[in-house]
Image (cartoon, rainbow, N blue to C red; front, side, top):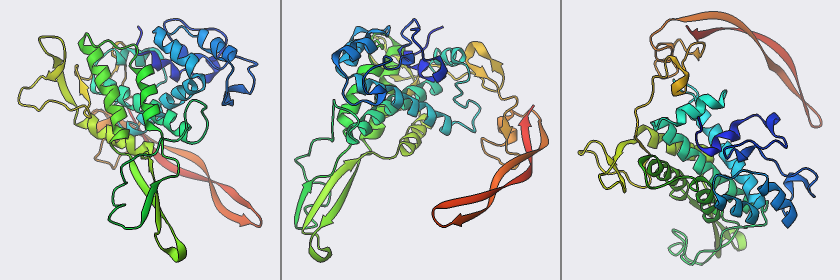
Length: 361
């Protein structure tokens, strides 16, 4: 069963080789061996780009064209998608479904169910791609882009502060990151059915979680601490903040269905408001994550570590789905009695610590 093409970014790096997987699993391809400058080179030759992009069985020809046009940026697309997956695992680490990537085939089955979890994954990975590319633009890692262009409107509060102001520094180029995310993440989706509409909507909701939360930072310049000139730039929130925002949208996600014309999604419950472009939407109920059901992408929660004293989602009662749990004493090793030695070394001893750990039956 094949899920979204970006799922294969999760395969172990050991699988990266000259063997090209079928079905659009293009994330497995590294930069061609022997290419000048290695995979970290900012400028790629036309031949290098063609070898890299031509070796990949792109699901959509447009993706190959974009890869050849922006080869180095394509590597940042992959890194950004991985950033999204890592954030997913952080947000769900104490929940019944923990965004596990232990078995790609199981994850692909999960993604065939158009649930809240699938909606979250599309949103966070799409945001990760935009974020990773925009950040690389501002750090000078890409030839294809640079800092965002200066705006014409004054930053908030600049005019009331008095004195001169200007856009300076290096604003994150979210416009370029957003465009590249659309080119790669949306290319294989079709707006002619409910699944395509859902995925496209959630992809955009993820990107908007960054754009809607850009922050302006200003610094004063002048004699003796005065603010004769205020230099301002725009930056993205931390990706942890982006993850928190999308997690909030996951909790408030709208259960939708396609309208009679087959042109848009609308709430299943007519009393619920229509979701905005910033909201996350889903079409199917989530599977039961308490028990193992590989066909639906569920690993179950048996063997998961739980917190005996917590009443939250990480507590043994909820995480173990009202099953019992087992407790055992485990010994761990950690650094202790650390001392700073001049100059510049910290030495620590290794101490053993015994603790009672609880696991779901």
